[in-house]
Image (cartoon, rainbow, N blue to C red; front, top):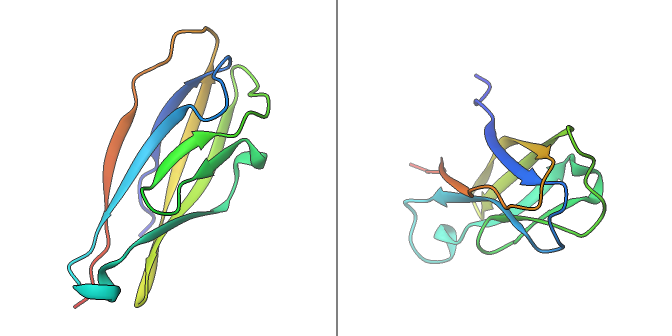
Length: 110
């Protein structure tokens, strides 16, 4: 089963460090096994980065091409496994920042 993509919108004028999306993985494990880290495994052409600790997807400062979509693959991992999610980022014209969305990425071990 392929997960549905998470959708985000960012302005082509967004400065470096602009928040695009926030993923949150929920893990039922305790202690070190419950610590989730995030990383991007594919996509974005260096224009986006994922904060390892909090799952925030941000712009890097490289130019964003207007009317373009970038497909990112973001991974949430702990000591026992990982789960990936596609994030589609649409770039729109304008200087006004669009709303930021957050979606829960379920990550549980039994």
